[in-house]
Image 1 (tube, rainbow, N blue to C red):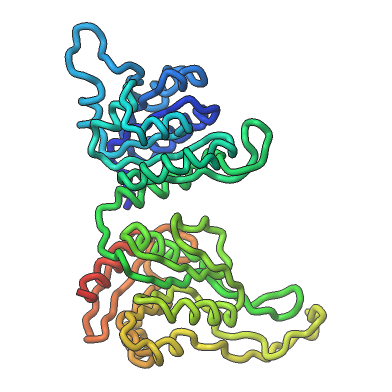
Image 2: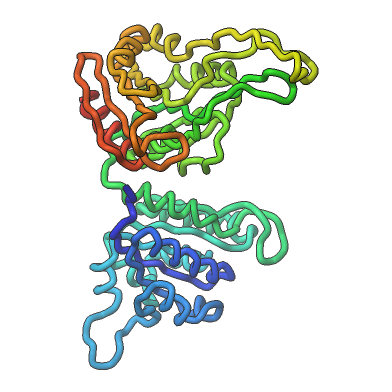
Length: 397
């Protein structure tokens, strides 16, 4: 599931030194399945030649308000009808101010005025320009008109200075585009807590007790919830995954750390999805020195049951748990649902082909409080997350 697949996006490039980075952006958009058409201002062509974007986009590049001789249709009208979203990246202070004033003296500004499609602005400029009060006012005007912004970032600028104004990372632009273009916004206003990843328990200053969870399922659930309009907090144990775009991430390591952070977020949450693979045991005593491998013995104790603690105080919250099993043990999962006062439990069977920690797919069964079960086929984890949120939204209605 990719919200950008088969979308038609117009990329407007303005006269910033960061214009060369728009080439990589166009390349990444095409990798995501997007049809891209590029519109360049006159100033942008001083930094990058149109041929570059023609090759990268696979389409002609538009630079002039008027079409070639013998073709009657105005470019700003035909492009406005074609594009499902206009992305201005990079956007200079001059072009932002032009948009805020309603000027239409070139192809790109005319297109923005003529199009009813969503518009996303990614600024890039010197930090002094970005902090200018006039520009701040113009950005506010554009937001009031419905324009959305991503960036700028903080870091080293073309001038060698360090400050805010840097062209934002491409992954952030892609994340914002997916958020805007995602078709469902049925979690707007919902405060959502998701836990993900594994936890680690110290055995000595060197060794830990943990599991193989990658966090992919929990991260997918958090990302889809954010796309659907939810205000998401992700409490994550150790994971190598990049944080989901737009999601507030709180990093933890041990089960007790996860318990404290999750219970704090739990107070304000409407929906809670406990997808983390919490370690079941920890060492009763952690020595200050490394254990001797030849004379090692472990005294283990159970870790806190965070999910059961939440179930005891959930009130009107919607609470979802996960049951990781090496087999389709529906009754065992159902027992866990009842004991922990859950509304839904997701049974994850590791023995199924396509299920596992490091793979991109999963095979799960949804088990409800009223006894219903719904096995899902092998699906990408983002698609599994989509199905789970579909069912949660249906239940909340």
